[in-house]
Length: 473
Image (cartoon, rainbow, N blue to C red):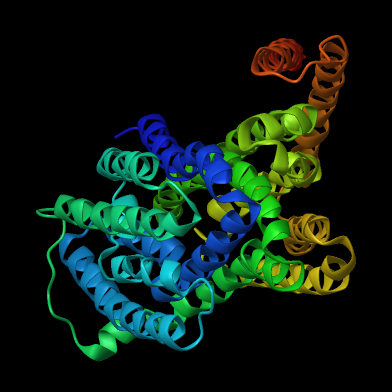
């Protein structure tokens, strides 16, 4: 299947994975309030942490390793079997750890956490890493979309009050397990499980564990911030931060979707020594991603203060204030994602990824500890901004002599300028539409799309003219 089709399916999959909770968020916010959203967020965040432990670093290591072995069926089968056996051991241990947390540690959120147990069980049969390594994205997108739509329907039908949050947890965790089981069926005929020795299986543990360090570091500054807000500032502040972060996470799904598609492609090209083709892919990806994230970041800054109270309800107005600075993390995330998925991981230079995100995690923890007590949820936003900025800076320090960073930063400056003009135009339109309603918000969004689209066309035309002049010279 072509890269464009894979990208389309994976964008759809990632989009639905993060968009459906966003779609249910306005209903849930109004039914349970800020404390209910904050309580659920605390339980869900802990569940995600145990799931990350259960999957170790397979989201990156598994995809890369399968992509490099897929041309040889015997090697592919043994690689798959060894990785899966290791996965069963690690995910099984994580499941036991989760049950210990639920019954021995969890407090007010215990009932919700108990109904999230299937999230940890689903780690035993998650084969996304194998399907993506084989360049198979369609079944993942279609089957997961179907089960999550069913889960969303259950939320609207059965969740009527704060006491029904366990139903929300049960619906989403069951959907995750059902999606993983349905995707496992797709592997039939494409790989065959063969029992391999414990030694052969455990050889995948070390490189996977190295990537897991980075996974946990990312988890620290993308999940622990909510845990810290919940613990230090309370459920209400965590509810405000949860909804603000949820929108930004939804938008970042586009970035991770493109990176996930490109990583097995580039890993395969890397194995075949296609250096020039890889360089072209990286450049095109950087151009596309920076164009997208700049539009998202400045677009969020333009309308967030109006969007939040309309979408989540008046009690969540401050979520819009949080979204404005938080949206600019998208530019940093996009830049770092291209370097990670198309340079660092395909070349097996995992230490660069590990160092960059560990530095980001350290910055985030220090910033959160200093700022959350006084600034509450806004302190977590500042900590996240500093952490996301640290990651590409560390990558630059290590790779500055190998990559055309001046060209990449040129993309950032160009599209940020376009985004800034769009922001100003949208705010100007908004000044003539003081009433806060969906019609006026829609006009502002349409104005932003039109302005950015026109600026993008001007940029493309100017580039073509410059290229044609260069060729003539």
